[in-house]
Image (cartoon, rainbow, N blue to C red; front, side):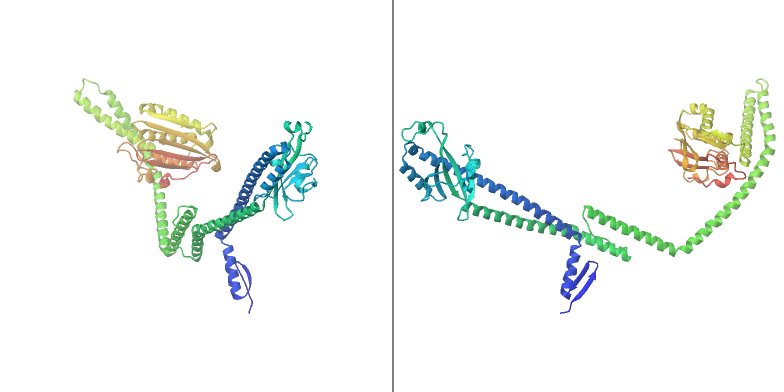
Length: 570
């Protein structure tokens, strides 16, 4: 017969082909989680059941033996009382006859009466009368361990178990025959009153039948326990196979399929336990991997299209840069136009106000006066509006900021808030300040920062015509070495489609004639020239939050066009 050797993942097997196959299969089974779990349960059940059965059998054996001792004690006491009258009258024939009759009953090994010297005065065993017993023998240990006869009334202390020469165990019960008053004063065999024990009655019962019953009980109990372990272990094995091995095997097969690239493989475990949750997580993982692979495949397939899209984005960016350069030129032009228009507009405004003051009642009719005043008011308002536009154009086109110095941003915020206190009271707006306990010192142009804060605060007030809450907070950003300022309101908010354009020059959401559209552009230019950033978050009818981040050690940045930053918002 040819011997072969096989070494695989499970171990090394050596022998015939059939032996190698069997060895390999067995080693695979032993490496299963279900088999190890079943083996642990089997060992625990076997040990636990063995200990419990042993304790139960020993307890029952002790109870049976205790019952046997109690019965023998009652029997010995009954024999003693049966002999009492004959012993008082010293009727030896009657005593012998009673002992012989009782001793011939089934279940009694022997009955003896010993005197205090250890001599057998009566016995159911022929030839023992008159002999002395060896007090050091196993059967006499109970009475003569310390050299004195026991006087305890407890039957368990008067009991001894020894082995008969025939090989079986014998239970002996010693019952003391005490010296009563009638015995010590009788004429027949008077004993001195100082002698408390006259002798003992020894009743011996064979335990062969009891031992056989106990052996049968042990065998029955251990057999039942073994059968119970086998049945329960079998049920546990089936349960583990169904609830552990099969789901784990499905998970293993699923993992192998995923490793092979089969991302469409799904596990069909539908339980609500941990294995079911693991199977569900595995299926979700497969779905996510498949989705990611599909996206990568699609990305590879549409790479050329994406390149074209990026090229188009770059083209649009180039167009935006050109537009920004145009806007920069427009800024320079706006500065020149503003300078040229500001002086004549100021003159028109002055003379309109002067004429308005010179008109007196009586010189013209009330209707004429009212009409002229109304026209002059319109001229004054529109001229003031033109002046505001010119002022904003000058600010918008300004390319330099003032002198930088170390300032506490908290003090700048407090100054700006103080300037709008009356606006807050008029519009029933509650102010909440959280400026922190530590100084927020940074290098900046304090007047420019204050101008930007005022613009944002006034916008917030105008966004809350029915009242609300204006919140201003300052926080340090150590990782950026910067300070973060938040200005929040609970006003009408900004539409989502308008948010990308709010920093563009001349863009406004206010009614015609109510705004120039340069305020936020100026704010953005100031923040940008300080090397900082501004972001906005807003929801309609919920409010708006502007977040400004300013570096602590910024340097003035020149030549930056604020119109190019209008898209950079959250």
